[in-house]
Length: 305
Image (cartoon, rainbow, N blue to C red; front, side, top):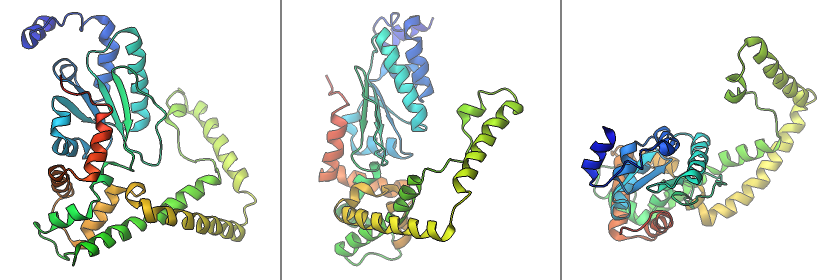
């Protein structure tokens, strides 16, 4: 049976692991994208948000992550539900290997705390790609690849990185200020629609939202609203620009900066290949950004025995 087969492969008695009291743990882990074998035969699982994070972390931190399954997460809201499921399951029975969740900062702090084998950490920059915004490393990478509009110097590249990052401020400001008006959201909520069985029951939910939006905008003075919106945005833009002058490498969307930089200079590499070259050289040089990221990993990834 499965128990005997696993026992033969691992050299240890795994029958207690496969008891019914582990079912909740295994089901949650499967929903997260890992398999039972990942739990049984590996040191643990590390779940990451970014599309390229798994490959980049395995390349940049091979010793730290040796023996771990690194898997990409789905949407954070659903993942946080599964973390809570694992935490609840852990209260009933001890888990056999650490399940580690590594979230992007993404201008949204997670309120989840890990416990026991369930561990939660968050990058201290917008996303993992922000650690790759190292102009010295990037300049040396670009010397080895085809580039249509090669940066003239390290200083030119540094200035270009900063310029591309600062171009994001306007979008950040607009989204932030618009939210302060607290208008009702027109979008559908799956939690409301999927739980109702008839269109007649769903209709009133949607019309209540439409009526709420109508009341909020019924007496809106367009000219006055635009003037107020622009004034708020200008004030916030000044505040953010001053903050980003020093902390742009942490606050900007690193994925977007790298994509914009590739277009600006005409870098021939595929996006993932470009990132891989950067992270590999960072790891070889043990740069400051590499050490910062490695320190965050060290807080949740256990040392090898």
